[in-house]
Length: 304
Ligand SMILES: O=C(O)CCC(=O)C(=O)O
Ligand SMILES: [Fe+2]
Image (cartoon, rainbow, N blue to C red; front, side):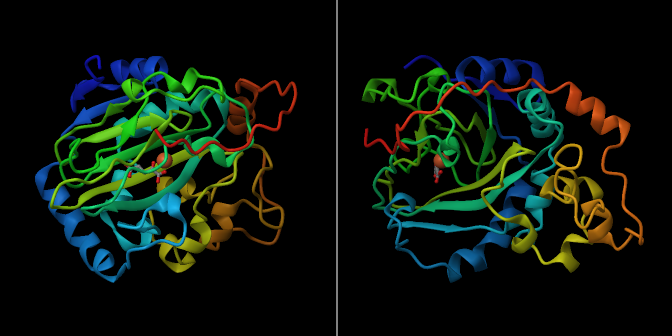
């Protein structure tokens, strides 16, 4: 396997965006400082303790602990999700296809010893859009523990974001996102990937924060995952990323009012401005999709 696209935390967005466009992914080494990672680990601990193993859905794993609603449960994730480097990458990867992007999913993927490899999949399989397709979602996987081949580091197929749906990877085409704790794997949601098998004697812990185009339904419902009174205390940018914003002109209003005004109790009696010039301009700049047919190909979960 060729050298992975691995960058230092001060590399800047340009080489990362180029790698993500070309190969579908990039790894940023040790972007979280040890204090932040320790705080994050502490915030996750009681929730991991309270989470049972053995998800009824085989896809999620029998020895993997998962929980979501991180913005409520884990205050450090509020800073991670607005990390300037990640948002610059999201601006450039998702930005051409939407007036606004938004938070799609927040969660922990904690793979315990003995877990087998997850099926390889595309996260964008949620949406019935044929591949290859422009980026619909962008995923970040933050290594809370070290990620190694032995302990279940994410497996992925470089370049598979450009493949048609029918192509299944060979074992030789699979790369492993080995990275020290505090590092970050960023990939487009159409990249074929999956959690690895954990053959070590300690858990592999990752925090996944995903983004999607603002005109798609979010995988995790942010409006119900975080109580409204709590969301009201969040910074404006974070509220908007959760979806308390218009997805584009007129998209996502509440009773003809702006959702951010409704959240914060500033909406007033009259209809809100649902198509401000800046949003009109952003909407006009979107690269529009051509939908030229449908095909019954099903959603792929590949055992490789
Ligand atoms: O745990 C991992 O490394 C990846 C998990 C994953 O891709 C998923 O659950 O969608
Ligand atoms: Fe996934």
